[in-house]
Amino acid sequence: MIDQEILRGAEAHLRRRDKKLARLIEAHGPCTLGERRRDPFHVLCCAIIGQQLSSRAADTIESRVAAAAGARARFRPAHFLEMAPESLRLCGLSNAKARWLKALAEACAGDPAYFRKLRRMDDTDAIEALDALPGIGRWTAEMFLIFALDRLDIFSLGDAGLRRGLNRIHNGGEKLDDDASLVITAKWAPYRSVGSWYLWRAADTKALPTEV
Image 1 (tube, one colour):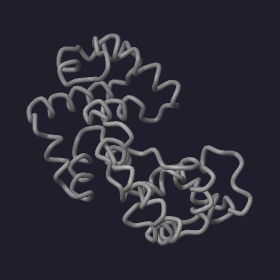
Image 2: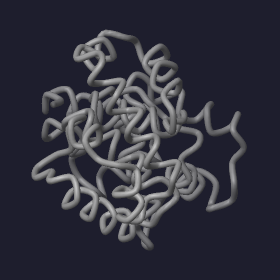
Image 3: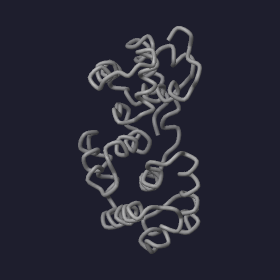
Image 4: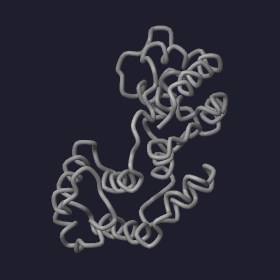
C-alpha cells in the first residue's frame, strides 16, 4: 500500500511540473493507486488471463478459471499445479495461457521467496526478471510493478491507454512519437506511475477539462 501523504506530495509535484496534467488532477481528484494490498501471484495470473482480451471477456474467463480451480478470494500456485491443462482450456484459455499459468505456478512454488526477491530489486531489474517468465512481457511486468508492487515511477510506452491519454492532453489527440512521449513524462519523475493514473482517466473520459 502507498502512504496517502506520499500520493498527495506526488500530485503536488506533478502539478508543478506539468500544467496540462495539473488540470487533469484537479478534474479527477486524488489518485487512488495503492489503496489496498494486492497479492502478487494473483495479479500476475489475472494479467496472463486478460492478455489481448476486453475487460468483460477477461473477467468472464477469470471467473471460470477460479470456479474450476476452487479459488475463492485469490489464485495460489497450488490451484494451477493441480489442474490439467485441458481443464484450463475448457475455461476459455488458449493453450499458451494454460502453459504460462502452470509455468508461473511452478516457478513460484519452487521459490517461495520469489516475490520478496522482486520487491528488493530496482525497477529495471524487476522488469527484466519478470520478462524472463513465460507469457510475461514488458508491458505486463510494468503493470505488475505499478499495481502489485506499488512502484511510483513507471511509465509504459507500450500501454495504448497511456499513449492515448498523453496524446489527448499534450498534442490535441495527434500521436506523439516515443521520444516526445518520454521527454514529457520524464518531467514527472519520480512519480510517473501517479501521472499514468491520471492519463488513464483522460483516455477513458470523453470530455476533458476545457483548458487542457
